[in-house]
Image (cartoon, rainbow, N blue to C red; front, side, top):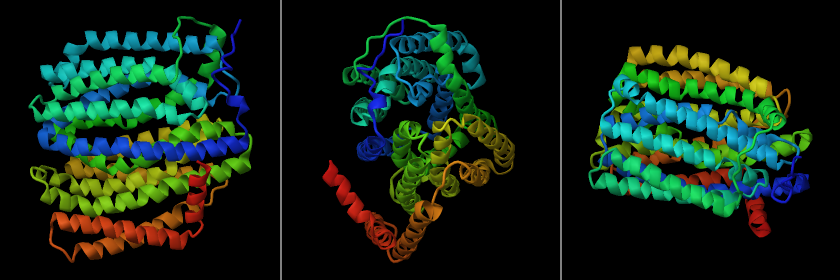
Length: 491
């Protein structure tokens, strides 16, 4: 007998209006709180890049890629399938997913642990790097234990609770890593930070969303989640091959230092996406799933979500490109990252395109067009493996960055495909933020040339960017200010 978990999963009680309200509030809550969380991360990254050498960062990126590779095989799309499901979840479904996922994770960890000497030989890892690998594998187990409580929170769209463990885990990791790196622990500081933050995150997850784990298995329940989960996981597998697989492959072409420089450029170029877009995607996937039978409301919400992402991501990328050369010059011991400035600049183009296309692929998944997303991922993966290694071999780090950017331009195919299912006003959602960001960029560039390279120059550039962009946005979109005021009143 399948026991209902209706008392903790009131998904079907959500009306269209309540979904929209929770989506807007959820996006605002996640963005606000994650700005704090990511702010801590980026300050931490700035300090870690002072305390750690590029080669140590290269090891961290390579080992993280191995962990991410395993993570894709530890889920089979279970979480996404449970979130996307229209019907209410049952207790046997939750326990079936929990049991299967833990079996997969433990099997993977055992295989990698036995294969450690081989991995160590292939990537020339020292003992500190091996401990880092094991710490990341342990964090994978901790993450799998959090899956069911996190799914329940996302289905109810209670992101105010979901974000508490995330923020706490992030702060603990960064404070621990920076302090230990400052004390000279090297990459061991990252290993300790990963384990400590993971344990605290697991504890807090079960506090904010109580759920009693149990071992059970139902063939019927397993099949029901596999129907959506397997195609979804194939997409994430291709994404892994395209991104993390490429990181591992490039390690043999441009070396650890080259990977460190490329990783630094990618980290900062994709920072605005992590700051803003990830929070919107987290909210909109369950929201779009609930609205998949109401295409008019879906189209309206997709347009607004793209506008919101572009409104925040585009100006961040512009100011990043203009500020990076100044910061590299004025921050002590930061000049070692100057060879990555060109890569950073062109990777921001890829980041800007992703701000548009990622919400679109998210929409396709939410309305059940998972096969179409899979075809897009095949295209992007093939293009990545054609252009990036070739250009990396010819031009090193800058060539690899150029390859990623060329692949990014193929994302316009996604715009055409999504238009068959959802009507999106791109002039409103993309055009206005792009124009406002361009005007801001001109103002900041002119201001930059007035002052000499200094901290004062940075402060003035930031102030000019905030003022000029705000004015440009409210002139181009006069309805935005009243909308913001109304949202604050609703809270």
